[in-house]
Image (cartoon, rainbow, N blue to C red):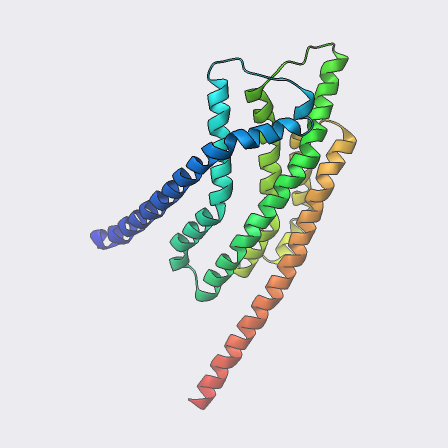
Length: 256
């Protein structure tokens, strides 16, 4: 009995290993392409405000190489994201019903679209706002602004990534509703706690200023309310499907 229970676990580990190897191979290929476009991406970033208004410095011989590789890796992850999600779907689909498999696969393009939307909002709205606030503080204190390329891009990514991930909320909520883990009623019950979490998140990723908080908090609240609305649509469709399945089973029993 013990060996019988171990075999499925080993099979799952072996399957996960195959999927991860495929993902790493695709990442390696994408990284090679990223190394080619990395200088172009970096040059573009330097021509767009606020980067165009400052001089980028390196404080270590490794800074240039580190940024070159980091941009190549970020490019590789962005390009490979749909494939990574597809491989993850291939791994977990055995534990899902046919309908859940179709739903999960259907959500992959929306996941990428939401991430791209969040990335754009973070880069063009939240990041310039945060940068302006921090530089204004430095100037009020008569500090010399000498930015290193590592510090600048690190500051940028620390703001962009959380916001981009927050934009995945509607897709995640829709999927969890489709497989029966979440319901619109539960989301409405959690609303006050969700708003508190969103206030904390907006305070962490935006400058400590009321207007800046609102500019980040309002889109996050809209995302949550959009998630509740979409959850309601998915939930009603799920109930209708289940009703049809029960009716079909009843007709079958009568005919039998």
